[in-house]
Length: 552
Image (cartoon, rainbow, N blue to C red; front, side, top):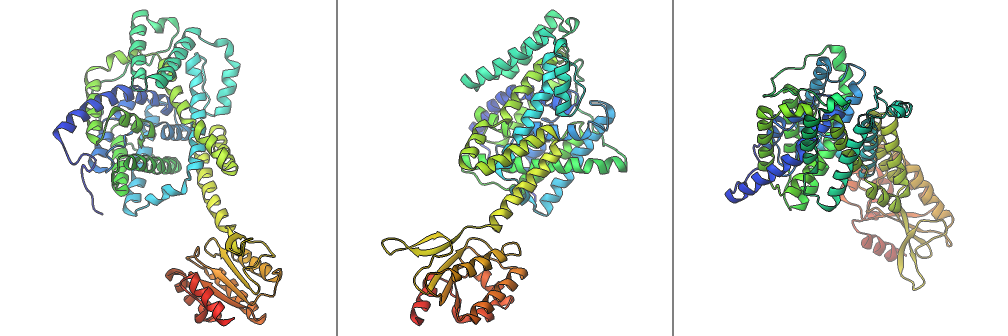
């Protein structure tokens, strides 16, 4: 396994380094409030959000290849492990943080295995449709979870339905000043995001919230604040858990692993294509593994290649990991000298910031596009979103993978099939295969749009027989355009040999055109070449049709 270092920084350029430094400063001003907000989703102390953009970010810059990916706290993975750990220990407790650290360590181990065995292709099993539905469900779940702190209503439930019920029962307990602060934060962020997207409004909200809380003693007026935040560097600790606890954490880590692989790969691909750069996905997986190992050992939580923070970095002008390293340097200064003021930060300010993040995950435009182009896929996205929001994130991930696979299998099970048939001008055009079509009297040219395997071989054989039986003239030649076929499994080979025998008894010649090398090897191995006859298998459709016309 070859490992390269600092691929996301090289080549270095003095002029570009200065620009990257300013981009890193801008990135820090926009993202520090966000990583603090993610701790409300994760159920961890506020300082752990800063830990996620310290050593983990540096480790990805060392081992990763993407020049743009920002690896830090992320709402989706934070929601996954907080949901999975909520019943095992009280949030923010010492035990909870140990469990959080072990989830990060298990996730790092899974990512390392993915790097060793080159399992990055697993990301492709989450289709864009169900991933959109998944993130929409996460957005609803996080947004609803923040309503309690935004309104001052005490909410202790972990399930979305239970949270809504507690909020509904506690409407008379709304703390109006808390609600007003949250509403102001949300309105400012959403308004300025539309008109001045480069302005770090979340940072302004945090600074203003700290100042107002200190000046007017918000805590004494019933407005909750985050309280003391420990300063200094994180200590290196190993998260030791029992064997039973470890087994319970494996599914949580697997869920985080799937989302990290899918989101990080998609995000790094998008920005590499945008800037016409090459990408080493294996190196990125190694970087993500190292980043999560660093998070586990420094008291942070699972980190991910964040789409929103990467977009912010690109907007700030970052074109290499130098900007991310500057971001980490600024976080280091905050930890050493500026954690004191954070204790006055109102929780409602962070809740308002997180609420806007949740709204950003609900991609209405993509859902609308999916609905207009593919209503069936839109229903898959909606079902996935509903399961994530109402039942759970882990179940939503599992459903997303299953639905993606079923969608692929459905296309292979019921592929497009065509018959070359004459139009009004006498030209041969591909038309959807229907009984009664023929290419010319005595000839049917048929195309099956997928590989032949155990689930679709009977459909193939039945459709061939139906086309022959309902042809306007007795069929003498049946040509199969095999351009879409690259593989035939054992079951399909047996069905195809039975079909060959049936057609021989009926004195119908079966001919294969556009047979590639892979398909020909399968046909030879399964005895299909012998059953059809080598002289009736051709590498092009033109040769197949020439042979037919030469013998008629």
